[in-house]
Structures are given as C-alpha cells and as structure tokens.
Length: 394
Image 1 (cartoon, helix red, strand yellow):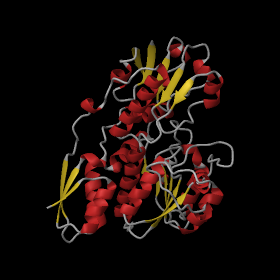
Image 2 (cartoon, one colour):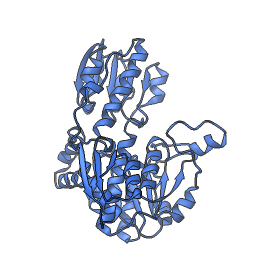
Image 3 (cartoon, one colour):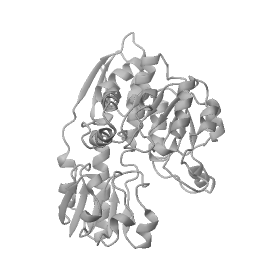
Image 4 (spheres, one colour):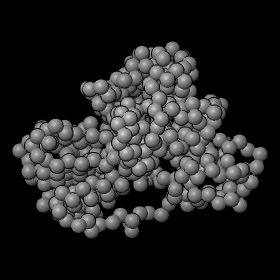
C-alpha cells in the first residue's frame, strides 16, 4: 500500500508508516502525476483535491489534517466512492490562543482596555466556542452568532460537547453592539448560510466606529476591496488578518492596512498540527479495518517555556496577561516575518507565504507553561487559568 502525506503534518512518517509505504511531499507537489499509484492521501489545505488530481488514480481514501474542507471537492469524492475525512477541532485551541495574543497585543499598543468590551463572535463551532471562553477570561461580554447552530438548538438537537450552547444573537445585533468582531466560519459559496464575501460594504458600514475586526477564518469570507476602503476611511479600528483572498498570492497593498498580518498560521500550534495527523491516521485505520498501533505522546518534545514567574503587585491585570501570553506566543514575530516578505517580487512572495507556513517555528500551547504568580488577585488567577495556563500562587 502506498500513502502520500504532506510535509506540514508532524509525525506523518511515523504514523502512516505503520500502514504502508509512505512518501512525504510538499502540499503543492501533490499533483496528479504523483498520486496515480497511491492508495491513501493525507494532506493539508495547500493541496486542491478534485477530479483533476484523482481521476485515473487508485486513491480510495483522502484525509485532510485541517478543520476546513473548501480545498476538497466533496461532491466528486462521494460521486466516485472515495472515502474522505477532515479534522474538526484539531487546532481550535490554537486559533483561540492566536486571537488572545492578537487582542492583548493590540490593546496594549493602542491603550484599549479589553475588559468591559463587547465581542461579537461569528461562527461558534469548535473554534468560536473556545474564543468565547477566552474572551470572557479577558473580561469581555460575548455575543454569539451562528445561524446553522441556532437552528440545531431550536430543533432540540443535543449540543456537542465543548460547544457554546447559546443564546445566539442576530447578525444585526452584533453589528450594532460589538466593539470587537471576530470571524470563525467556514467558506460556503451558496445556500442560506453562504459566507463568501459575507463581510462586504454593507456589513462593514454597519460596524461601530473604531470596531476592532479579526479574520482567522477563510480569506474569501471578506471582500478585500471593501475592507481596504473602510480601513482607509478611518471608520474601522485595528484589523487583524490571518487569512487572505487569493492566498498564497496576497495583494501586498493590503498588508500595511492591518494592525497584525500573518500568513494563515493561527491554527499552527505544534499541538494543533499533531492532532490533525492523529485524527486523519485514526480515520485511515478505521477505513482499512485495522487497529491503530501508533501513539504520538512519546514523541512530543518538552515545552519551550515550562515556567513563567510574574510579580503582580501594583500592576493592571491586562498588562500581566500580555506579559504571560507573549512569553509563550508573541504574535508580533509572525507579523514581522510576514510584512518583511511583502517587499519580494510576486512569485517570491507566493513561495514565501507557503514557506512561512511549512517552516513555521514551533509554537506550544498555553497549557504547557506553568505560571507562578506573586501577589496576584483571585481575578487574575482565574483569568490565567481560563486562558489555559496552570497557575500557582506564591
């Protein structure tokens, strides 16, 4: 059996090597000529899976180690009987930590106190639900918008574990009331829940003046020209962009308009990528009818920042939270690398976008860093723990 895996999947060789001959390729090098004699594919979003890739091949299983599926032609896969899977929730915590770092960094830079602000979360699945937990930890009031999930709740369907149960707010209410709006929706191009260019002139024109806007969902959910015009008008507050229309060919004139600009790496914590591998491997085993025999835990490296010590006396909680978060993940480094790449010629920019994702520095999640706090209030300790940090009061 031959299995082709994408390079950006930690431990792919170790996992899928238990099932057959494994070939590791760059995501954009997984093309028709390379997959013709493959049986299984394990990949990420840089590989477009459609008839052009698979017709005439012997591939019977495709797994993507991502929470999104817009790079898969699911209708085609089901039409020809190819089993497919994805990894919902694998990097949800990673994205929520990205949002946390972005908010705290932006707040410190612009003198914005997050506590007491209203955050509107559009899309409240695995990612949005975790963002809601962290937003409350930062003292924010949260409004949730997710029409498909709202319909499920109204129909009496059980709420999946880990997801926000509601209540849900209308989009109109979020646009009227939110000081911060963050997107965590899939890219859907048709139907009543269409999200393609959902953020357009009308949407942006309804936002409160100075609203902080984040997109860590999919690039095409936002109409780029409309967003650029709103930023230039001065009516919109700081913008955080991780996903871009047309990526990896990002329009360089858009990047300076963002307060924080990154190359689709919000979900790229080491743990998030590992869990993507794990979930696809287990689904492949289920498809093949074999018992999983590989485990990732023995291969996990030690934490980069095992301990953090802070003195809280006489300091604002948000300053301390930023100090702790930035020790583990300072989003400014991702922003700097991405901005530096914008001076390159177009073809080089495209390659660099992919390279920064493929060679992304190891980023560990908050739960692997224990925080020792001196003279910290109960409120501070509670906030740190809600963000995911194990805490010890000294």
